[in-house]
Length: 294
Ligand code: NAD
Image (tube, rainbow, N blue to C red; front, side, top):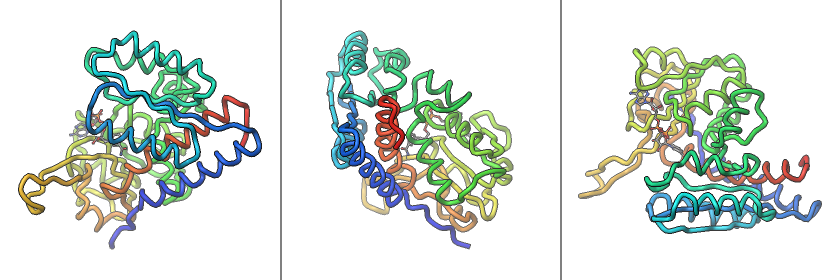
């Protein structure tokens, strides 16, 4: 058996097309143009690439993009003042502060300053609390992307045994909450889990969010399972030339592909979905703020 490769790039385009349609409807029927503000502090090259992509895709979806680059030594109070100004700006429906922040800034204080209804990254404790209780808040983008891909691949997830590997606030925990909301039987594995191989072998759905290259072995995968690989790891690729690198996931793709029914590749799987879901969240936030049911 060779798995179906879940094409995150194509699916993200479908999500972005839907966002662009919703943005057009908001403009024609309500005279509203959603606005997304992205704030970056410092010069982390990876963050700069992400932010450039976010700004470009925001414009392509027909939304207003507000982009703020603050110097590396920006005091925490100044960043929070910026967030407060964006909270008060009616043209801004969504706010994203690019993480990680420089060491002298307390990330939780900054995320906590974002108005929960504008927290399109879904990381504010109010949104995390809503996800863990009644639902209805903003959902973190990468976890939302994982669930959309799973539902698109499998349809109804009810009753599936799902294993989430990783318990981070950014990915593992919210993915587990979302799978629970889809009526899966959810197990969360982490760095202290005793026998990861047997947990993987029992799972119909595996979501790997660890950050260790190819640590989930293909031979562990239950035949016919669906695998969502969130990990993005850069490893040396001497076969491409001296000093060259390539990206791999947390799952040993070549062997997992031979057992799974469907699997996301790295790159081109979960990665492209994250920004698409950020745009989708911005439309959701705009509609909620204006009491619009699209
Ligand atoms: P993190 O470092 O915050 O969390 C890693 C988790 O893995 C921890 O909960 C830890 O308990 C668990 N873990 C560590 N060793 C383990 C082991 N041996 N067995 C089982 N679990 C173990 O990382 P994160 O922010 O959740 O990100 C995870 C990966 O996902 C990274 O590679 C990151 O780059 C990637 N990521 C991708 C996207 C995307 O857009 N595709 C978004 C966010 C994160």
